[in-house]
Image (tube, rainbow, N blue to C red; front, side, top):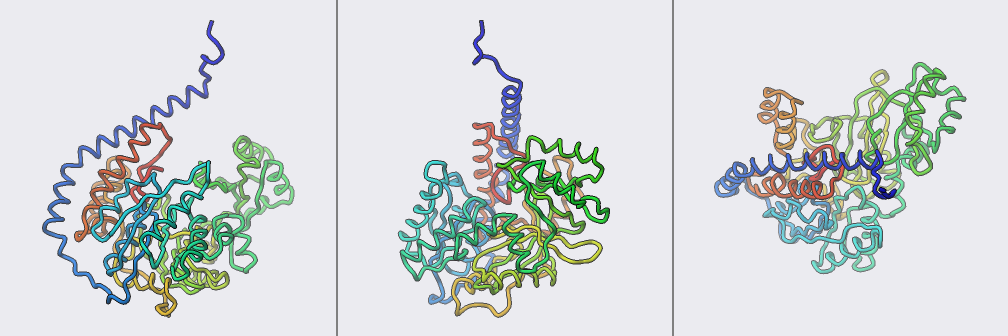
Length: 469
């Protein structure tokens, strides 16, 4: 007779089959990348042999060069910042979490050393990561610390800034002075409340912990206004409802059917916001700030997966960001999401992330971005006006992402060729070609192999972030 422990429940069977599917996907992607590797290797080698001297670098005078520790190198944005500094003549040290020890950035010729520090884990939380980063800073005798934070390390990087000030007060850190401020900016509700208190325009919002609280909001007649659209917005990052903007119905029967979809999701451990929907274009604003003064600023149109970028100008968004950063005396990297109402043209800020946005790749690795970083790090070099990428900047893409879109029939061959002819790859650099090869044929295959071994759930290979999502 079979024991209870030998009986597989439908849920367990579903999870088991799901894991096998994700393993199959990972294996297929690995095989495709392996097939493309010889051709990419030959191309990269030719570029390295004949094209790497094609670019002349404007090194700073020796008195302006610093030893800089940069973190977050799995992401293209981290590599972009590190190479911008390296091309200016700074000595650049890289450090990242152990789980990203395969980072392609370590193969850049503009990097001096690469370290790994302990992952954040459930035993000691962030302490091992913090101590690891401080040890690297002390070993290398750094002048600047520029964390290109992961989602989970932004708060830790603020703590590192405080502790480095105790170790060596002359070390400059491009991150927020107070971990409490970082926590506010990283919390959707606290951020919106802060904006409301500063009289900066944001949509209507109300936090709810259960369906009963949603019903209480309905009783006040909020959803009866035909001119407004409200939806339930998850507070947890990467939630399955992140892109679900289904309007909350006003009809009582439809309302209850709507709530039934959230019965197993919305609870004390997983709260949502009743959030006003603003119909319009979405933009991301990215800023490097020192004591409330913008040193670098850019705006880009948003796309669902954020894996290609264009530059646009938007004075109203810039005015909003300047007001917020000045009021909070921000020092650090910050990105904010905005919606421009189709009817009124007014802009509403909907979210903040206390870290650098990947659209920084729209900057060429030229002196203007280095000057903005230097102005943020040292007061005597502050820029009177923020550096902005040119409005004529080329469209930025990731080649293997474009190939995947073509293979999955998400774009046609004409669109693919147009993108390649009129844009530029975010990672490829004729003067430093190996990070391009290693991202596509080492870092991503390692991530896929880990997914194959674990059976983890994933949707896309995100070359921008250098990991699976």
